[in-house]
Image (cartoon, rainbow, N blue to C red; front, side):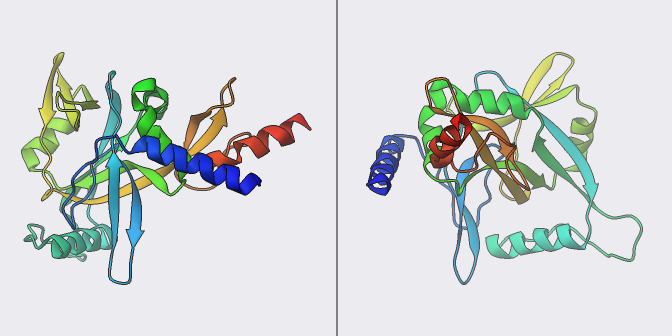
Length: 238
């Protein structure tokens, strides 16, 4: 009987997600920073299928790192170029000391991200994360930038993830108290990582994001699967 009730609850949550605006992504395209979705794998390939992105009222701080290519990152770059049918613009020779470089953007202010997704305007998006722990959030993206833009970013006063007037995610660079949008094309994206969610219950028993899971286990008192929060609360009472 309990399993039936849980199943009905999950169906209800998923049905409430149906009105959220989905993101159209071409086959082989990579997701943007902050996107929520699920990794789907078959015999031939694996791809990230997005379901939406948070509405960000207060921009979230992002960190940028410029990193030399190594064998692993260059292989990821070449694989993406093959899948998208685009031409490689990087020459990598492992024996040479001076390696070409790429930029990794990562979500630095995870407390801010947690607060954003827990807000009412992102309830429909959060419902996906509640219903299925396989849904993840894109936490880093690897990008091959022009040398001029990479230099500008490295000397910037700040870098932020925000939502534009169309509700789409964007990166903004801050210099001399002036913000401007950074345009990143699919040709520049070549890799990404994702993170899961660790849940706790608020005073009303509703699931809330407590922190994010990038590796290992969720902290004590939280759950990777929101459906287990009732079991956790019962054990704590004992």
